[in-house]
Length: 259
Image (cartoon, rainbow, N blue to C red; front, side):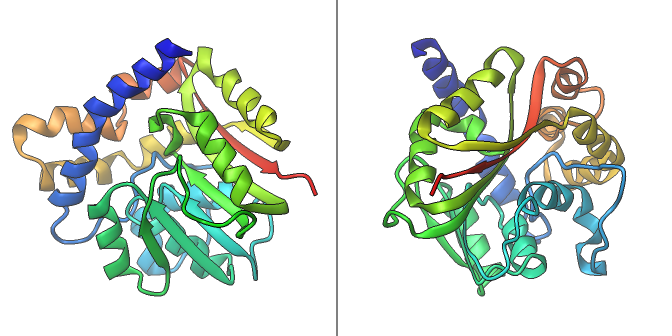
């Protein structure tokens, strides 16, 4: 456990600059998602304005549509650039949507771009909300960067109402993946569904590769483009191959806080 915490600390130290670089490089405000995407057997019907970011949207839909969110109070932890929460708010119709992220640049972008949603700078491991404040908590491809996943799970459990749902998707190296479900069960969550979605994520990364490479070429200097492609998971990168070979497991989970 100590080794895992040290590994996560080091990984965060390496990866954190990339999130800052991406947030500051997008001077045109065209990047609303920072996830690897999802492509199942069917495609969503989307408005024309959402089509360019179809694959990241579909990952949000796959995760958030597992329960009926209409009329509910929704919290997204690790909201990033805010596009996913905007999609959920517009299409799945929660009554109230709140997004939190540790990156102040991302939150500034979110607040300016989506004024209908409440965005706040906040640590996922120390959520500044009263107990039982939300009907659902959403977390998409963010928790692998948290130093203490169990503390985050405890916080998600605490802020949910009894009977509320935790809608969760992320990846881990295969030898750590089982520990995620174990930690969530130990927290008190009931596992409603746990699916492995490597195939669908790889399909999305392949289908979305041209757009991702074009954005990298547009916004990053030449010396950073190789690292940018690795960060984006484009085909042929080590990250892409790790999903392809099963070294990393991408899962999508629906969990419930008992009543």
